[in-house]
Structures are given as structure tokens and as C-alpha cells.
Image 1: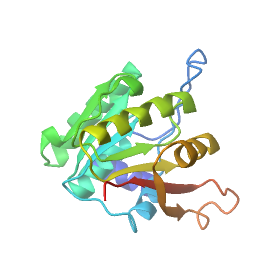
Image 2: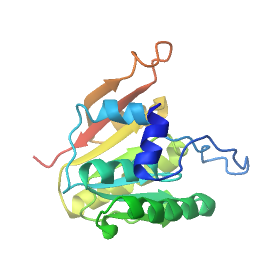
Image 3: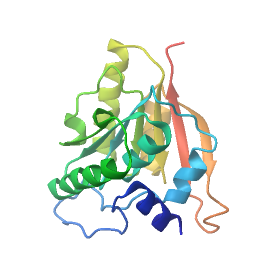
Amino acid sequence: MKEKYYEELLNIKTTGDQSWDETKKCYHPYEPTPYFALDKLFESYYINEKDSVIDFGCGKGRLNFYLNYNYNCNVLGIEMDENFYNQCMENKKEYLKNNKREEEKINFLCTLAQEYEISDKDNKFYFFNPFSVHIFMKVVENILISFENNPRKIDIILYYPSDDYIYYLENCTPFMQIEEVRLDDLYKRDNQERFLVYELSYY
């Protein structure tokens, strides 16, 4: 029900999973985060218009439009697949028709995640298992370099977190888990249906 409601509210098309080219072994098929899961996360996790959120493997841009609509924050979707990137741009055009927002606050970039240069203003990073842990490690290394250049509070948000991602963050980086949002009431048989939030603070 929420899928249809939000798609109409935001005037976008991001539903459905996607078949995938098996030659892209380090990248995972498209599957958007359910809207009801996002609603659950942001009942307790705080975000505001000053935040700059990067969604790695953004697919068709669902998270970006959801966040910009609800919190008017800066959002950037990183997507390596040109077809998905084009769908993001089409969704952006349709979104702005019905939702008067600052156009420059919602953007998409067609590039490999590990090649994106982290901006000094980027402070929240979202991952729904978009690629292998080896690529994830490289992206986190880029985040840490940015932190060294400009110390600030940085959060990494994982949805349906893989054991590899968790192990790397908790054993090989200074990030600390600060929040867990479980979806047990929505997915009674799947303990992995949850969000984990990790924080890197300069305090």
C-alpha cells in the first residue's frame, strides 16, 4: 500500500526488482528499500536540511526523492548503471513537476562508487548491499580520507547489512555502531531485516 502511495506522492517510478547482467560479479541486482522500512528508520533516526546524504548504488533514486521530500536535505545518488541513471534523471524531472523543491539539492552521478570523490560536506552514507565488500572497503577508505581532511560527524547507514560489511566496519575502522532499527514486526522470519547506523565522530 505504501509503495503506491509514495510513488504517486513523489511522482516517480521506482518499484520492482531488476534482472541483472551476471558479468557484473561485484555488483548486486537492483532492489529498492521498501517505503515502510524507510518510515520505520526515520521514526528514530534524525536527519535535517543541512545534511548531505550519499546513496551508493541508488538504482532509480527512491531514497533520494524520499529524503528530499520529507527533510529537504541535499541528496546525491551514485549509480554505475547508465540505464538506472537515466531513469533517475527522468524521475527527477517528474518529481520536480509536482514537488517544488530546490533543484540543486537533488542530484545523481553515473560513476563507480569507489571513484566518487567524497565532498567535505557529505556526512551521511547509505548502503543497501549494492556491491561486494571489496568495493565497500574502498568506498569507506575514501570516506575516512575525507574525514581526515575535514573532521566532522559522519554516519554510515546499512540496510539488510551483510556480515562482511559489519565485520569490516567493526574490526577494521573507527566507526562505532550507535543504532539498530529492527523490522521484526514487519518481517517475522528474517533477522537480517534491519538498519544499522555507524558513527565516526571527531569529538
